[in-house]
Image (cartoon, rainbow over all chains, first blue to last red; front, side, top):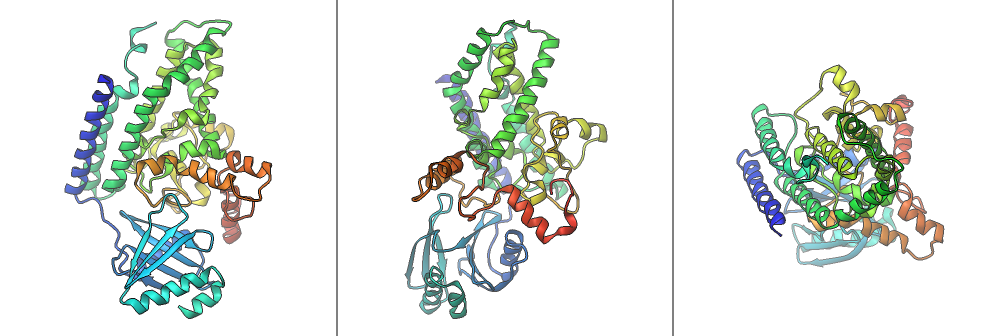
Length: 146
Length: 308
């Protein structure tokens, strides 16, 4: 037990010191998905050569949807100072819940918490929700309605 | 047996040095304005994973030790512990590490344990500490058994492995560009290991070495870092969580989901556990070989280059 305390306590103190130092030196630049260019860069990196039809930004700047020309819909998430992406399809959407301007997407993915997107108004949210629901049936049709 | 082989593990003794070097790296990056970046939650997760790994090793490490002692007991000769056998043991441990590491990347069961180390999108000294909690499950320790059977004392083996891991700490950095040419030719370096952590198609499954890069050159897995293809770090499918428990177990959860799908043959279920990461019965995912092939199809001008 003594050995564990000798390892544990200094390690936890070291973590706290490190985090304070990172914050104090302003080394981290958290990503905000507040413009299409940054979403484009994430798509270019992960889906080289594929063309984006249009991008929908969540008002909280933490999420975006990239609607590709081939009908694929990609969810982009700000993740610290990086981004992560997932293709939305019938296999990985566990649930989709819309309320007022907010849309919650739960993925069948152990490493992704629920995504909470916020739109301008209920109509905009409803339109995106319809599009994602249709994705599971006919991707091409879903895009033309988005 | 020498006293230094009986005390606290060398990796634990080196912990204060690790902390000091991380602080130095943060300050250097800030002062120079280049050479990597830090994100607080990512770095905290990495260090916490390292702490968890140390605790788990302390709890279950005796199983590996017992296995190595059992092998040593039946070894036909027992080698003395001196500088010569120490050097030979260090080299053999590094060679075994190369193959264990290669297995970790080429079989999903090994990858499930090792993926943790590659799960950060950053490459800095904290990444070195992002270590597995399930190393024992991977079975990698079995590749050290032949060394014990050759008559090397398990305590010497553990000491050499500890030194090996300590060496591997310093090259998880972008602060250092290249080391002198002679050093780059023989030793594992920041440049070589950046390649190993990159998810660019040409860099996948390359540079498995621990201390000496010569193993990769001997066994055909060496790829040099290129200025025109800067490494991008992380997984092919990056994680969306900093939760250490999820980071630590996510690939096992993936294996369980895949292998228990309806309608699979027994062979397909076994393949989901042991085949190369990315293997998929219906083409829904890509292995690293398929990713490289897709890249070459899009960029035929790069065909035949190292790693492609």
